[in-house]
Amino acid sequence: MAGAISTTGAGTAGAGSTHAVPAAAASAAPAATADRKIVAFCCRECAYAAADASANARTPLPPTVRLVLMPCTGRVSPLHLLSALAEGADGVMVAGCLLGQCHYREGNFHAVDRVAFVQRLLKSVGVAPERCRMFTMSAGEPPRFVAAVREMDRVIGGLPPLPRSEAGGAGGVAPAGAPLAGSEAQIAAGAPLAAGAPLAAAARGAA
Ligand code: FES
Image (cartoon, protein in one colour):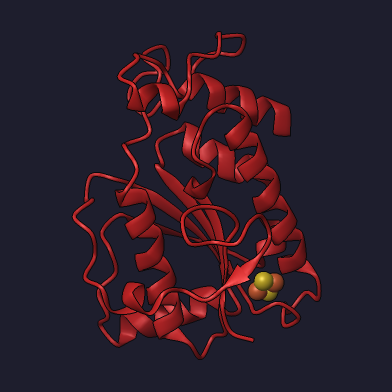
């Protein structure tokens, strides 16, 4: 089954569940969120190949997205995801082969578990768990890759920028031992905080 695996967030069915990318996301123009950063960890065999094909077809992707080539989504660790968030990304996504079609057999199943784990960690420190999501596709589905990226761009565009700790500088990470500073709920309430600190704590917990 082709589809996007998503975990939590609006319109999704819960951690580890699968659902299709909304059709609107596939055709929608990129959201006006060029100041945001999304890091996409893409498996070489399917997702990156689909990205390559979409680039050859000159299909525009949101300017927010940075691709990272991975041999398999099974190689993506929670630390990769949390470090990307702690060091400047507003969202991270893992894009791999369809379930049951991983070229290394079970890599994407491990990735599903790790994305769900990271979402739980994010939630525990008050960061919106939909900042980390997973999608699957085949190499022959460039439109599905584009739809996944645009869906992620839409979700991240609907969230406030992920603030950084002053201790870590712009895009920096608070030093180990720094107190947890708050949550996105507190951001919404206007309370000052440094999200780098809870992310750093989450990263330490995942290490
Ligand atoms: Fe693509 Fe494993 S090779 S997810």
